[in-house]
Length: 199
Image (cartoon, rainbow, N blue to C red; front, side):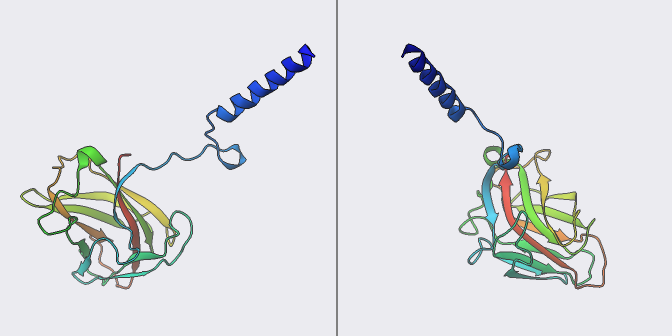
């Protein structure tokens, strides 16, 4: 009887340990990707969207249905930029705050310095610039990011940590697709899920 009790007790301890063991694997015992630490979502285009966007210098902007609800982006609505062919076409957002005086929306030191944008491009190796514009501070633009995929969603990262970003000073984004490239026009670029991350 003691032997049976001991065996049952040991089996219970093993089961308890298995249930409480930290499991970092997903399906097929493959390691799961680390969770993205999103601090703030600026725009996801669902509903009426969070910001207002305006296209300039030849390109056009509109909110459209997601052209490919697959991979990393299965949301319904996305932003669409259609190129006009000019070299420096850009799309810019309104203020991040509730009013034009509310420019304290971005707190880099608290929320992180990495802006991530999901992009669906009609061409690879297309330069994508992202600029923060603010009040009484110089604009800060990152010009080193390019698309790598064609007609497939990918996440582009813009790391502002090396720059002297001022908390509470920036009121809008400017995004340029195919920056510095003259084309025939008509190229389609889609973007979505503009967010600020800690890593």
